[in-house]
Image (cartoon, rainbow, N blue to C red; front, side):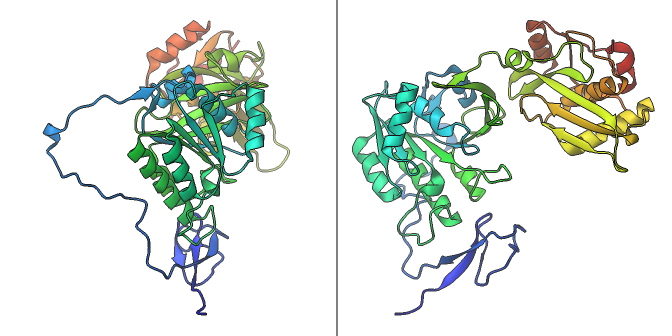
Length: 435
């Protein structure tokens, strides 16, 4: 019997090489090259594309049809989706283990079962485990079918037989196609399985949700091309030590990206939080130095968050700059700007900044609240009560305008805060907003 030929494939980027190496020459990832058996038989038709009998037509002759959307029954989830799920769409739901992906999708499946048949494909848990969770969530419905299988070809037969309105695949890393010899979860399997599911969903007009694991770096496991195959990518965020979860839109072909919804984890599943601003500020300490309210924007939604800073004298020669919820490099720039413009010797102090609640903020509008929190903690003087801030800080200390200011101001006023808009330079912070 002839010896099978093997090849080493990078599980991060898909790079192939006949020899093993500790580091991938393409993406630079360490320990990502895994040995796989190379196919020698004629390759099957790729699941990426399906034969089409249509012919090219001018765009002026293409009829404009309205997208068919279905409400999930969870208003906050529908808002992040862009108004509801689109028939035949494929969405990837990612998040850390134990954060609530399967629980949430089982709740969605139960609500969809009122509209028609729902097929929940579990490749990680037994049907008995899913049934126990459904009983706890009170999500038992006659139209909700559970199928435990890893082979995607067998799964497709059941999809054809059941003809559901919604299919959930939990998870993509445990599914496999038998004509691909690599193990489940490999680059080849994840890529081809995602394309297979997409083609099946588009052809049958079935809405599909795919569960995806994340790596220790917090990125979606598998090749980057996986995110390009699906129509939408959503991510669950939040610390498992907290009782809330943040559902964020990363990519959405049928709606805006960056949208955010907040859910609270309860004994009966995930419960939506209609007013996240009030939720995040309910435990904010009053009249304490280093605490500032930030009027931010997530997607198209305004949200109030608490930014805290702690400035203490450095113990070691090199002072620490630690940030949670904002970019650490951005923090270093803000500290340097504050030190120069106000003459504060922060080089002798450790600076710690935290966005309370585990929310990650990427927009530059958080600069001013961070600077105000640092200055407040350094002078041990609290910020004036019921004050909210936003604004970008330049390297010369000037405060610049940011997007959607009117919406931020309305959200602050709705929750009893006043936005201070007359700060033009970082040096004005002690005089204008500190008690």
